[in-house]
Length: 107
View 1 (cartoon, rainbow, N blue to C red):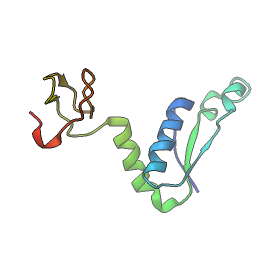
View 2 (cartoon, helix red, strand yellow):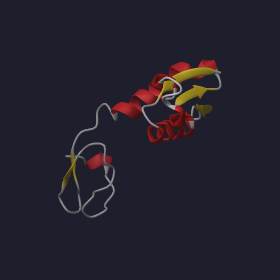
View 3 (spheres, rainbow, N blue to C red):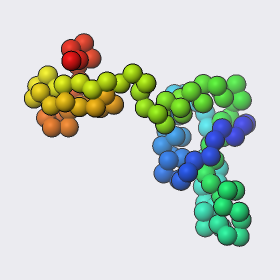
View 4 (cartoon, one colour):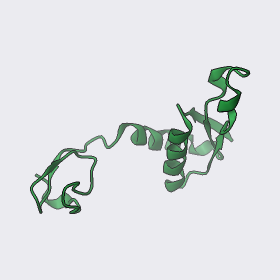
């Protein structure tokens, strides 16, 4: 078992845990309840931590979290084929009409 990273807050920690679990990486969340002890315990020791169960997953887990933090590297804007709305690259469904992105017909 190895500490992978600290999260800035519990919500982000849970999101990262979900991302890692979806990628098939076994992990645990530590310090889930320590925020209430802040002041008695140094603040930097109260942050939620994500630990991976298998040390061999470290490189894969780091890459998965980097992509989750930064978003798709090559995501470009696209136009909805149904209503013509322009959307940012990270979206897979048009916010205006609900049509799914067709990656073969991106403009």
